[in-house]
Length: 421
Ligand SMILES: [Mn+2]
Image (cartoon, rainbow, N blue to C red; front, side, top):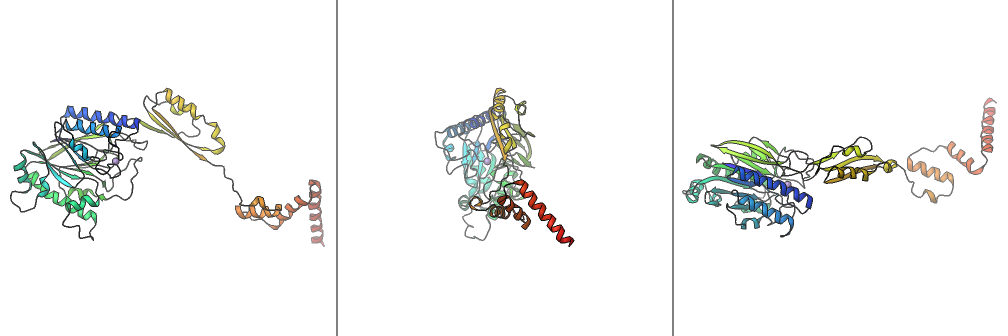
């Protein structure tokens, strides 16, 4: 059984980024037409945010899933709730395509048969005759795969699956998910005995995953260990959520399909997995994702910073500069130079290091110079000795510098005389 696995497509309405996402999705479809997979899995975060029907993002997402469904049976699971808004993916199930499209925001197992997707797998109870995987196989014609769907977890979808156990509030959510995974494992073992491929499509965090520096995680995620996931005893795990592609044995994050921001510097793409008699072979295919380059010049940047910019690059220049030097950098000249080389975007992020000046609150309202000096000393933490105050008083009393010098000199002479006496 051959399957293609993508995730974190993040269709959105930013024109330039959307154009890039569409380019990478078109590449995915072109590859699918060539590879003729038996299954396509989209492991969550199809959307970047809740979008209106008719918006460029919604139309592009519909177009992509429609094309998938015309190449192979397709499973789309719901990703993070802030990205795949409530109900946003459900409309995709209504598309009329050559192959069936199965869309879900529930924890469930579905059977992929030559006659389409069957959901009866979840009705399985151990020990019940005619039920379970054999019953499913009997009803559905040729059973090609059992697909365990693990969308982003929230209480609602967990409760709908675990109706028997939710009353037991003392148990952690992750324990409930482990129970679900273990239950799926029973079915999957039976499927494997029948020579049927078993695939888990999930959206969530695996403990120890490496993030792209550009991906920020909102809030505390439910985390699975690879051991938790393996309770489901699948041949293959196709995950989404982490935007950097990575793998642990038969567990894969495809990563995002293109570079969503400057932090996602790593390669982008999708997987093609083949399961032959229980043995898995997988390969990663890179998409023609846009090039996003961050430059951190040492010292002040000039036009030479963008010397190696290529056609279509998105360039970010990050530098630090002292407040006094701000006028020395001609940012417009740098932008013009990059644009002349065909850059699609130039972003300049500078951190200005301010010249430190401490303001002593209310100092201007004080009358004498001595009061001002004491206030300044207090604010800046400088000790003001009696000697300094006296000398300052001289500055106020005597305007003539020569008179001040003579006064101080006389004082010294007197001091010396009295010491000698
Ligand atoms: Mn994502």
